[in-house]
Length: 124
Image 1: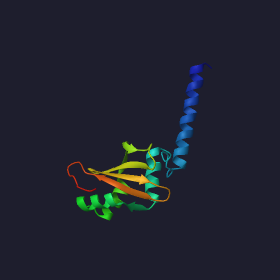
Image 2: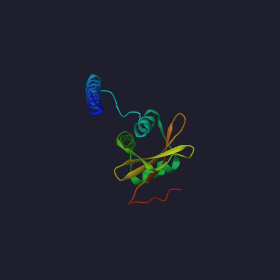
Image 3: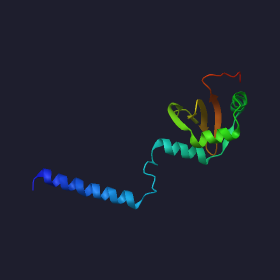
Image 4: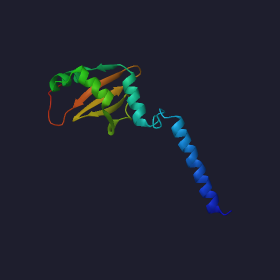
């Protein structure tokens, strides 16, 4: 038996094993270890506190608390705009055309800023 035949049998065995594992654990989150899911889970499990600038921007853009919670649960994290090297880490959460800067603290998360591309606010 040459190398090609052994390699083909190896690939067949690996593919059968992977298929069996996939069907044995259908509800397993196979990509749960990736950074995007880990950060999103951390944002959702800690309570959200809104600072003064965040509250001013929410009032200016007419964003309700329910809309903010919807953005937290369904928004996506933009790592290019996030500032993860700072302390505390600040992540940009994109939802629709809005961007939310949320800082992750020890026991809470804090809304720092809201970015709207077509409107501006005169918040301090």
